[in-house]
Image (cartoon, rainbow, N blue to C red; front, side, top):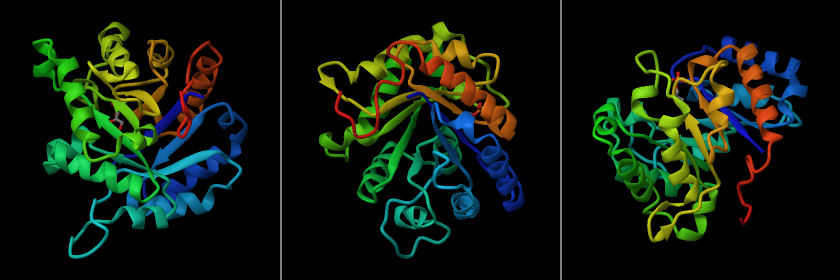
Length: 265
Ligand code: 13P
């Protein structure tokens, strides 16, 4: 099944979050054909989870959590806390966290293993900055981030991890839309197992960064792409549902979304 998910980043009050959920529930039939996920800010995780009927198959997750089990980490929340609020997935290592909050590959690795220990699906974000792409270093960069991000995880648990390739130059208002050909080699590398000589098999490989209603279909067509991770273009519930419809259509084609969390392949 194709994955279509959105992080709300630092947007949406509780009232806005609830209105989004109500819009989703009103269009619940559209959600059936895909593995949909929503990552609200921490303040809205519990409200979103509680308002979503269990039979509307939307995964709720967090955008970040700390690796420590608990203690004196002012301002942080633990994996167990986000799970307690209703999250079953946690985003880790988004470039905005690496850039603005100094998250290192080792921080990311600690979080990935803490997420799995807490029973959460880690959504490990990787992607090269513009200057690395300019010199053709993206494959090496991304492979390195995946290898380091998974370095504290037992190999038998790698199949629990969803990887999102999000090139930094494509993300957000300052980002530019990628051409499918620009991301294809990276998606091929990630879906093939990433590191020469060592197969790193993960649950799914998603693409994120300037995805929108116009380019979603062609990005989903890129071989090795199991889904899309969307920011701005999915913040209106009507648009999120439209992206889900596009994902559902793409999921009908041969070989797409073949990997499932927990499944051997
Ligand atoms: P945009 O879709 O707004 O470029 O953001 C992508 C992203 O960072 C998803 O987490």
